[in-house]
Structure formats: structure tokens, C-alpha cells
Length: 295
Image (cartoon, rainbow, N blue to C red):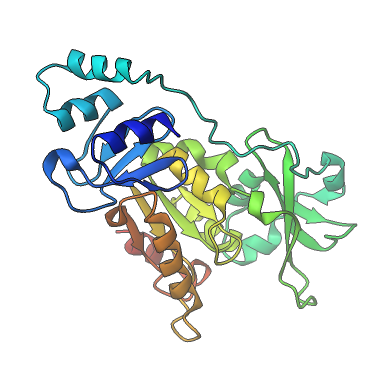
């Protein structure tokens, strides 16, 4: 049995297992919301969403037992033989498929397709893509997908001829992609917020408008890898900004609601907001419209 689980259970907490943490109500203030208190399994560090309080396990023990000093709480934990451990939150990468840089050897730095769509070449060039002349992605504008070690774990390409029925083609396992984190994880950390969008096209439109704290899902599903990344970043605000299919089948809105339910297990629901674009997608919005939408 996990030591944190054992200690908190003895103190009367009813814990719900949600991956790397437990969720429970804050007994020390007679709380009745069963998800308001987050306690990490490995260290016992905790966070009270309602009161914005946090601390080490001994602080939680002190509050719960009502002891006068922190030394009493530490003594309690010492008798329980509690020693914090450290879990690795990064998924293992041993079996992750990678692509050799040579597979992009025939790529030319031609950003004219995106320029025609209103995205400046200086914006697109950040992502190290271009037009492939040969191979499976021939005549597509491709973007390499890097992992945190700058190994290429995927290649995604947009048809620029107008002749293919498949607009976007992917090579690699999308479930392993957290894009474009290699380029903006410091920005997300600084901004303490992130916009979750469907496609690279959406991301580029936002980036062009100065909104660079984005993550692309390449569809309508949040992968476990993206969820893990968000937990690690621990943003104050998550915006679910899938396409606004107001004239279609509302797929983006339904997907956003599913994503909200999934993330609510790990984050305070008040910190998650469904914020769809004011038009069908961000590519249809001007920079001015995007900046107004952000506000």
C-alpha cells in the first residue's frame, strides 16, 4: 500500500486515485468537495484549490490533527516510517519511434503557402518546416515533431497542391506528440496558461497574433501525453479552444466538454474554460479579431 495513502486513510481521508495524485475533501476545514484537495502520491505535497493553500505532508498532518507545532506532525510521520520518494512523470521513451533527420533532406524553405494564408514567413520558420520534394510527404508543407530531447518523433504535412483529398497527413504516433512544446514550453511556464487547439493552422494563426502559449491536439482528443505535460506545467488556466462548428455538428464543442471532464480530475474545474474561436477556426480570424477574442 502507498505510504501516503496509508497515512491519510488513518487520518480519516477518503481518497480517490487519479494517476500521480489522490483527490479528497479537506477534512481540516470540514470541506465536503471530494476533489478540492490534491495530494501527490510520491511526496505527499498537497494543494487546497478552494483556499489556495499548499504545503508538505507534515503541514497537512498538523492541520488535520490540530497539533500546536510542526515538530509534532513530523514525529507522527517519523513513527509511520514515511520517506518521500520521487516518481518520474515523463513517460518512458524506449519504444518511441523516431525519424532520422535525413528523411527531411529534400525539404526546401518555401513558406509561400502559409504566406498566402496570412501567416508571415518569420512566424512559420520558427517551427523548422518546409516543402518536401520527394517521399511519402512529397508536395506537402511538413513540420517535424520533436520530443523534449529534440529527436524527431513525427512528421506532419499539409497538402499545398489542392489535389489531395487528405489535407493533413501524419507519420508517427500522434499519441506521443506534445506540439509545439519544444518551442514554447518556457512561454507556457511564464504565462501560466495554455490554449488547446485542434491543428497547426490554428496554432500558427494564434502565434502570428502573439498568442504563443498553445498546444496542438491534432484532432479532438487529449492524449495521455498532453495531459501529463499539462500536469507538469501546472498552469493557472487552461483554455479549450477547439474549432467552433456552430454551423455543423458541434463536434468541437462536444470534444471540449469531454476534455474539460478529463482535465477536471487533475485540475480545479474553475481553472478550465471552454473558449471556442469566434469564427469556425482561428485561420478565419484576423489578428485584431484574435486579440479581441483573447481579452
